Length: 320
Ligand code: NAI
Image 1 (cartoon, rainbow, N blue to C red):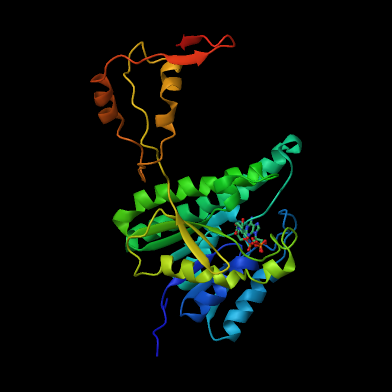
Image 2 (cartoon, helix red, strand yellow):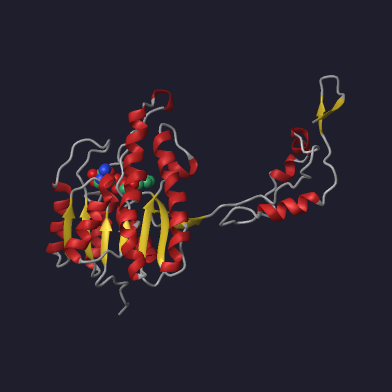
């Protein structure tokens, strides 16, 4: 018989776990030997109201199936209290899944500070607060696994979601830094852009499509990434949903290098614009370019040519 990927003896915190993706993570980890902290303040999609019911239902389901779980009803804005629940109830924290989220979709023209601030409070501050509180435990035990939740809207932009996209792309930078700071302590952090049927998507997608996008189908990738056997895949971005899993990465064009002197004008860039846009020999960077090496190279070059512009008489003029 095939062996199960197990999480025995480990403690998993899942935020926003009263429904949708969060609930699916909890039920999975609860069935694979982990003790689960089910956090949810029972918010509406826009972040209003609260109720303890959402988290309680999930806890009861895990317990009824023979698993271990406890509810926490704090907002992720007070993420330290959620981690406190894990420590008080189970004595440790091993895996943190930052999943809680809300929407405040509105055209940018009509966006108010409140729409912007609330989205940042829940997604960005919330993920920071839980991770920050878990970090000392992760470092001390030389083990920690973090999943942050981005979105296609954050990676590519989406109408009516300037606030949400900005907050979701923030999850990418946050994860990349946690990965760099954590690797020495065996703290692995990755970020997912999921797609799944939930109340978040049920109003914008047709039912036949939603039926193909069960939240449960996001779970296996998350399980692989947070398992103790994953000691190297960190700081990565994954798209996951409807049975599909793909990694995304940054791509840098081979780029243009100009002599850094007074001939380095707008016209000099126009002249060689093709090189800026040339992806025929790309790099896949995980950090910024070596600026000093580039500068040294640039100093060896001769002066830059000005650009050329054809005017309405057909005359070619030089542009600087
Ligand atoms: P959902 O609305 O079913 O679940 C989100 C949960 O977060 C809710 O149970 C809500 O009560 C809880 N929550 C909201 N504010 C909270 C707060 N301040 N503290 C604690 N809990 C809070 O949505 P879904 O689809 O399961 O989304 C989960 C995550 O995945 C979110 O971060 C969302 O932005 C992201 N996502 C989902 C996509 C999808 O296709 N469903 C697409 C891209 C991203």
